[in-house]
Image 1 (tube, helix red, strand yellow):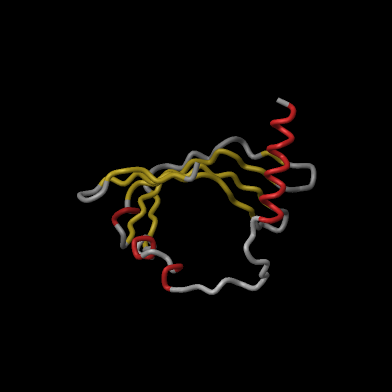
Image 2 (cartoon, rainbow, N blue to C red; image 1 turned 120 degrees about the horizontal axis):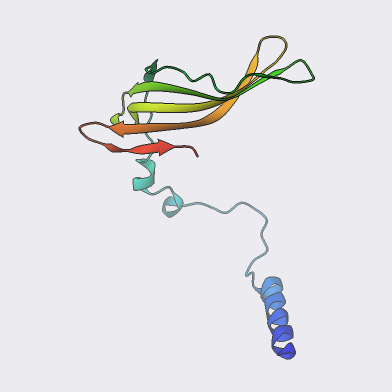
Length: 129
């Protein structure tokens, strides 16, 4: 068994050292076969839209004052209706937001979102969890 492992390592090392047919650091020459397939190029679609608040906002947990004068608010929940030029992203959205307020009034905002799509053409859910 020990000989088999050693032999496998030797063969692997030989393949790594001598397996390349050419040692050329220049960039490869691309041809039309190296281009993005048409079905992938069609996958991109730009859209625009608007978001309107729908339901009441749950303010989240009580703001926590941090020792450095900053304030942290976690768990804020908001409900919106997102209307876009693409029906695949049009629907109710729910946002779970965390905010970190700085002393100058600015804030760093992050969280998770979920869009429920339910229209005449598409049904489904987008999320970034």
